[in-house]
Amino acid sequence: MTGLSHLDAQGQAHMVDVGDKAETTRIAIAEGNVVMQAATLEIVRRGDAKKGDVLGTARLAGIMAAKRTHELIPLCHPLLISKIAVDLTIDEALPGVRVRAEVKMKGQTGVEMEALTAVSVACLTVYDMVKAVDRAMHIEGIRLVHKSGGKSGVYQAEQPA
Image 1 (tube, rainbow, N blue to C red):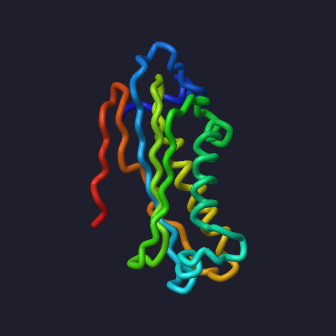
Image 2 (cartoon, rainbow, N blue to C red; image 1 turned 30 degrees about the vertical axis):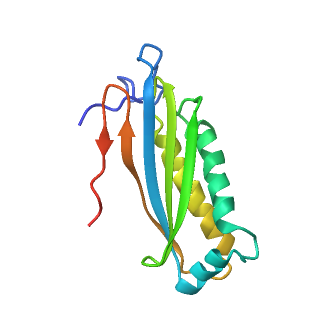
């Protein structure tokens, strides 16, 4: 494993200088799940949760969160993002909602944190909107599944067993 780029020689945290890095197209994809009771999933599917459209609201929350990642994570750079797609899919097998976010831009630093933030906030929004009917819900599996661009190249996660 390489050294941590956010730490200087004395171990002090600092924002990485990306000014000399080449601009490349950067893409990151993250995913996560909100696991719930089947009856709660049915409320989500029908779209009649008391707080409103669960999936639509969570999609917007994820998009908004990705754009504000630099305000939430102290050492992240503010980025000019060109694409944020947040997809929420009902999955009977969980039962629950699968969340996937793709973030893209052309720049000097990656967008992994933005994709992970989008998924995290979208999952939290799903949880918030139906927590009154399902206290046993849980969020799981938030992870980076793909990253490309920059000198480190492509990362592709293995599929879980």
